[in-house]
Length: 445
Ligand code: DOR
Image (cartoon, rainbow, N blue to C red; front, side):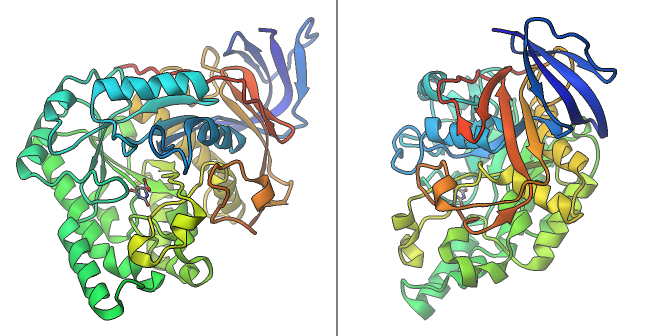
């Protein structure tokens, strides 16, 4: 592989912004030179023209639907859309078909990713009421973590057996990521809504059915169990102001309980249901403006550790069904970083904060080796963004297999110009190089 030199970039890294030339050699960042690099000799040169160079984002929650649900998405399409959006590494969830509940099934996913993923990848081991022995035998260096649905969502992977939960929290020897919504409260909320509306419940009822109280009850129970047993707990997609009291600011290395926010809960509010309907039906539900604003503040404080997508595509046909048969979730990886940079433009976050939550902290939290930072010796996972190149999300510029986005019609100021994955240009000139292959993430555990 030929050496590459990125000249005149504005690097954003570890709370600083500075000009430098960056030399890429054999997939890694060989040199970061604020003083510039003179004669390049025989290498490929890219003039960054002072645009911003960030570490590639690391998304700790995606659903790429393979195997079994590839009419919605697959790893080839999902990873290509991710790279076009500046996400160079992803961690994928187990609610595929069959669900990833054994080491063998997980290795099948790794084999698919090895053959088809443009981005770097890791997969969560799923937890069910019946696979605790398999979970016990999982080597923490082979997966990003464990995933348990404490409230049901796509894929019927609910873990509700008290004995299983007890063993899981007591014995879990690696990061346990949870979807926290109280199942009893969700069922009661749904029964009430059905009694009133039948099957065609208005979408505005979604955050009433999957209520803030249901989130709080489940997250607070999970946090209490983790405190009792010293579990390394990661609570996914926080959607309410009230849950934030369960978490503390501070360096991720000092915590055994961490939290994630997702782009849709930082962007949308319940006022958007009227315009977007079930396209913003997610579990947990998008809630009130006060919740969104509190989550934004918590991201800035570090009470929320990471920002991810929960990219979870369904077909438009599926999303057009009446409430009770319409699945929750939507595609996001292509627009998550530019949406966060749009919020930075609105002074909700700083660009440094976006890099902290989407690149640095995911790497530190999962102890990913040599990624997530612009550092010499680290993998050359990079994204070059133009903060002032407005464009509009349209169906024609979507890379998702499902072919729609909740952001259609949205104008973003930031545009991803180029994405490098392990030093290879995987996205440039508006095109994904689908021949590029990412690597399996490795962990320093
Ligand atoms: O909205 C969601 N969709 N939330 C989840 O937890 C699962 C996801 C999916 O897989 O569709």
